[in-house]
Image 1 (cartoon, rainbow, N blue to C red):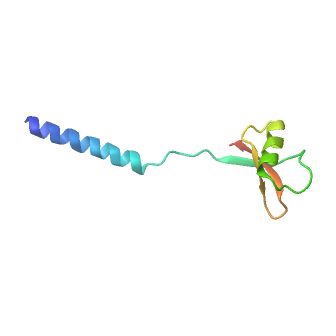
Image 2 (cartoon, rainbow, N blue to C red):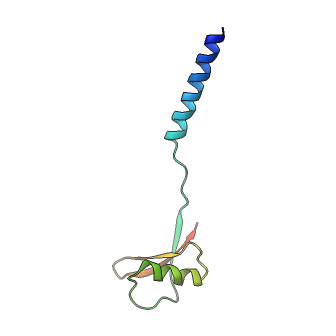
Image 3 (tube, rainbow, N blue to C red):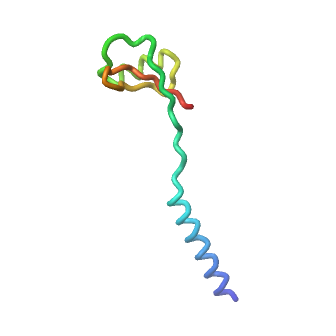
Length: 76
C-alpha cells in the first residue's frame, strides 16, 4: 500500500514537470505606431526608442521597414 502511494506521487510529479516544460508562457503582443516626432531616416534603434519614450510609449521603439521609419511599441 505504501509503495503504490509513493509510485503515484512520483508519476504525478513527473507529469507536472512535463506539463510545465511543454506549456510555454504567453508573451505579450506589441502594437506599433509610427513616431510623430522622429525626423529623418531611422538608423539606430536606441535613438528611436528614446524618442518613443519621450512620446509616452514606455515599451520603446525600433527602426522598421524599407523606409526605415521609427515605430513606437505599446502593449496591446
